Image (cartoon, rainbow, N blue to C red; front, side, top):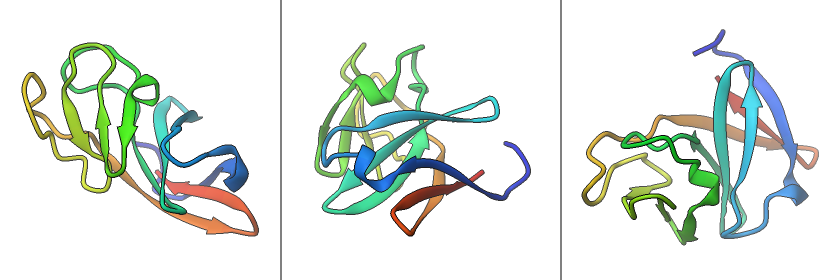
Amino acid sequence: MSDNTWHEVAAQSAVSEDEPIRVYVDKDEIAIFNIGGEFFATGNICTHAMASMHDGIQEGEIIECPLHDGKFNIKTGEALCPPVSEPLPTYEVKVEDGKIFVKV
């Protein structure tokens, strides 16, 4: 992790519901999710294999890895089914003036 400060990563309008995006904060690759107008951030790389979570299928609070079908809870990062067992890192998110900020 970086310096534990807020970083502007995207416009609120850039993240449609159930259509996550990938952003970078320094070397950290982060997925941004919109769940009913509330925004969440997790690590973008699956903890099981090198797959980008923003390319997965989002259904509500669940993101499915595009590579091996493992599922994670977006809000908590919890690994929900095999083959994933390690949680995704999660990050604090805030929205100000239409901009999304992530604490990294």
